[in-house]
Length: 127
Image 1: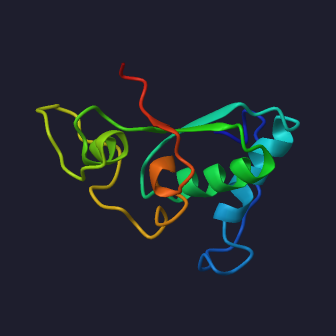
Image 2: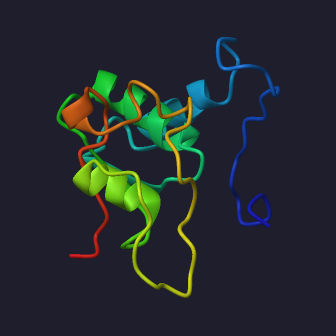
């Protein structure tokens, strides 16, 4: 459907992250080029953290002032981790969080919050 709507895709092989052809190394480039280098912010759902961390890392290298935001449900484990530094689920939402209840290797180092040396500046737009 996306191709029918006119989207262009760059298909890359499923290879480990250390391989220069890993898909994470293409996501940020695509956004930067399609926006002609005019990117002030990027907000993404947490999932496994690969896209959030990869795009965040790339955009911060290109423009350190870019704001990177993580979206997850209020009370979900990753929401609590990014907003309060505590990895726990709370609340009684009928909808589950978007992704993880743990810090994956995708998030390790640069996919975590800026208070821990990562690229994520803020969590959610619930407020």
